[in-house]
Length: 364
Image (cartoon, rainbow, N blue to C red; front, side, top):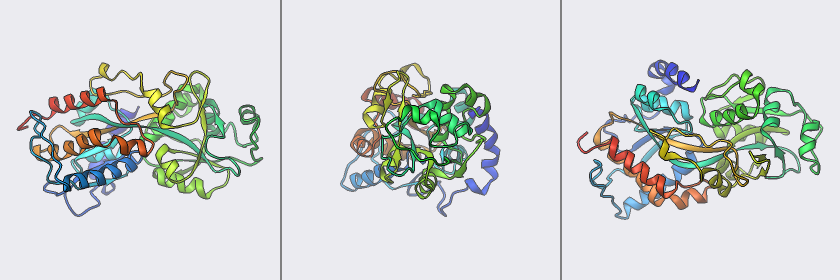
């Protein structure tokens, strides 16, 4: 369903001012690498941008033989807009930016139709956040079935027996649950609703999984920032955001029951546990989701951020963009860990570099 949505949005993206560059500077001939998309990835992309600028300013350079990236980077600035995964895909497809960042992998046939390639850059987690008096991070326990029933409107109060059954020692208010969800095209939404679809047949039938869904209930908010502001200012509310964002904004998040029946508090080591068994080598364009992965220590809502680029991108723009991502993968692992993300495993980084060499040859 997400592929039909993206294809259907392409014509809109090409003509709508909502997808036009918000900066006067056009991509062609610009001094900065430009990107747009995932709000999930915004904290780490921002940190990588600052680190890369300092590194290049200190004289660092790359020599990437045979991949069209032999010259050292001379344009270290990065201009990135967190407009959501769907908008990011549309902007890179339309040539407004050098890369899009999306939390939703596209299948090879869809990438071919859009003239794009994609590769993973970092792994993280989606967390369910709440604003409940006296309930701190990791104290509330939830299951996928309960969360789906909350958003379907089947569970409307925090004092519902289903919530009390998994939280017998937690004092929950006898108050109506206020629902908050994303209003924009969001990879976070896609992964969140994909998880709910796996756990709830009713959710799968009535709502399904996509970057944009028809929410049965609740208030819409744009981006992780919009959800966090709304949840923070609204007592007894519930929403979903990226883990690093929840930590930075000091929102309380729930422990979620995984596929083995364990309630797992979100943390980078739990995301890593879920990602360990991912079989990236069996994909052609890294089309893989890590949702509800097996393992007693695995957190069930683990998300991969993908960078998307045009196959027709100019060689100089490809060099500058890939040099930024090469630095990020090779030298930005600590930054990712510090923010609560999981850096790509070494073997996956090797696969990504091989993918670059295959798709961006010298002189193309």
